[in-house]
Image 1 (spheres, rainbow, N blue to C red):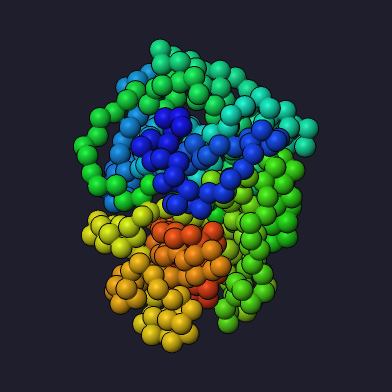
Image 2 (cartoon, rainbow, N blue to C red):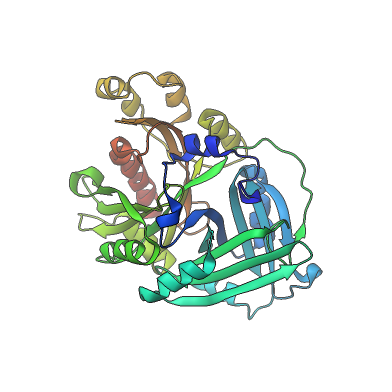
Length: 387
């Protein structure tokens, strides 16, 4: 495997994020893995500190005025194969600050590691995709990276990255950083969820089918994904090996404002709503992140005391009383089970948040927990006056 996987083995990734076998040679848009989740934020220096000390990520590379990049600061953090890039503008006229003024802290790029940038761009262009950056090389003493970029929903992009000829810490122009060791809290990005406007979900599902050769994994509509007050619709697309999974949500008509409506209002458009992080010890991770000040959605005792839940989930690795103590949700499907929990929004706006997920065979997304999750989100919306 390439250096993008850090020290997480292929077998570990299969367990962590539910990989399946796939013949990449027949793929018109051969995506290997997530390369990076790239953020634009109001204060990159403080945000990078937050992810290092609250999420246990290591600072591995940096670019900024001190390295010859005058316009903005960029911090590259890793945890296993998961890579976050935190960008913040330095000069008042920075486009990053313009983006932040409109959207707040948010994801600008879901960058993908691909085996053939030119093949991907040629296929995308033939399918009508907007090419933001044509294929080009960037080089330094560590080698050459082949890159391009295409536009997706909202102002989000997919950078396409082939780093097979590169041994540096991230990209040319970045210097390696030596960070203090800390306990790793998660090992990979499991999936990234996009929120799009009413009536646009099927458009973007079709776009991922045509442009990137993604396949459908799941669909949630109607009572699957509704409460008494609000509703939404969701479809999940993934690349062939399921290493890259993108659920796409749109609002549905309900009595009150859904979490998707709230996101679209406060983000001012479509964008990436949450990032799910795969861990092999969700209890230890949640405890460490709580200790560092991360806030999670609460789940009432009635969820854990329901006899139907106990009968449905069967035997799981963690005792139900421990899950109750940490407010971790559990769900089982035909392939196995999963444990999951969701943070509150991590910024000032009620937009971006995180999911922690521990998979044991399950390829799903916790369908049995949707009602409890959305009711928890609605309780937070009510406190904010946005329900």
